[in-house]
Length: 361
Image 1: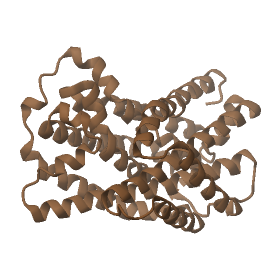
Image 2: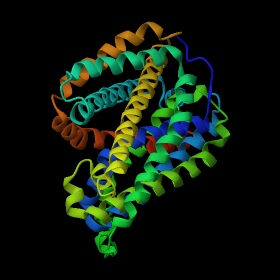
Image 3: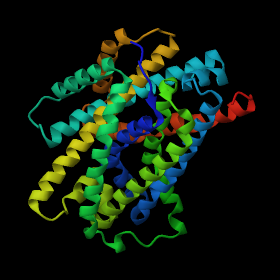
Image 4: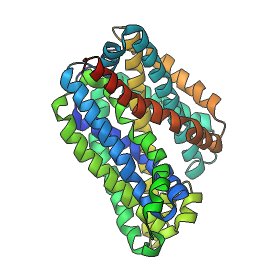
């Protein structure tokens, strides 16, 4: 199956933002509070600068080669042998990320909604649904993101507004130059996740209007940073830095401070729905990127026959990498965060530098 049709740069960034919502709810506030304590709400600014740098790198690369994908440009910059090796490594890492998100999806559902349902039933259900979307194509997924993301953002904003009255300024101050290093350390999980934008542009030859990458990227970065700063402010401001640091789902915990039992029950349901949808879109998007990488590596005409094999692969990889949510969190924190920063942030900067030196960009 060829990825029929093209999506816009706007749709690409909407899909990217949809993938951020699940880790934002699960991880960002806790990791920022753990390292930077009361100054943790500043950590998204550091990650935002890195995201902006990536956007500018991607913009300049596609300005030179508007009809290519990142895979084509990597091969051009590094040469075919080394380029292929790097593409294989990207395929492996993206597939592992895909598998981990499948596990997170099922673990969260069993913990929050379906404690009596076997984990593997939920995993298989997700995989079947994702396979269906893959057969439908990239355009269908992009349209889903275009419709769903605004609704997800509305839920996000609603919770922030309702919790904000519980925020205490004393939990967010003082802030001084001594917090610079802790703030940078607190941004690591955000750096690892914001850098996902690099993954999406492996679909570059299926993205139209790439002259708008810079403009759309600037607006998207501003929106993302604003939302994440606001989220961490309500978490640390209402719960305190020490409690937020120990609470993996601190955004969910902060939402429990909303007054009114009926409103609270509805908001909790909306948050659960938000992260389930975010995980689904992430798994579907990463699956398309991984299959596209396979297509580019082996110069295949289509990848329709590989969908079923790939879905089985991520099922088994996920089971091998983790047995429970604690294994998932440890693997993500100790291994995936450094790998993501290295491959999706550091390597792009190095590639751009090499491309400039070799006058390929």
